[in-house]
Length: 199
Image (cartoon, rainbow, N blue to C red; front, top):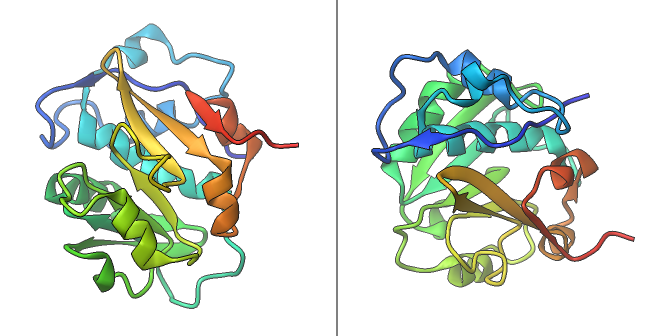
């Protein structure tokens, strides 16, 4: 069973490509049991903020079930208006499978360009706002991950937060339910906050 660990320490500058510690080390930290903390030598390794968020986006797929198998041959993670994070994802997902399908990263400038895909990350710099993106998507089964203070209240399912220089995330079960997405209890157990109690 897939497991997720506590968040890693990050380092500026935002958008810098990973140097030094290999990608497999970063992913290894995200595979640990939620109740365990990574060894100090690993937890103190420094990664860019975008690198950590890219790793989380990749790992989120293991903890979410979509209502039906994707029709496309690829598993697509779309990135809205964030070239730096898209570059990190492309580096991370090269030759990797997600849900048994080849992973693909698409950088888009408007939600209208999202003709397919399973995960959408909305860049912090996107001027349209999360609410407008959610209106454009309707109830399509897409895991929307935002990166702003009011991301969940605007309709996103997962929202990134930066707490004590560590990337954390919060989850909205109500938003996930509207999109017919099932979020596993393992993911909820390491979220900073869960909005909408599960019975």
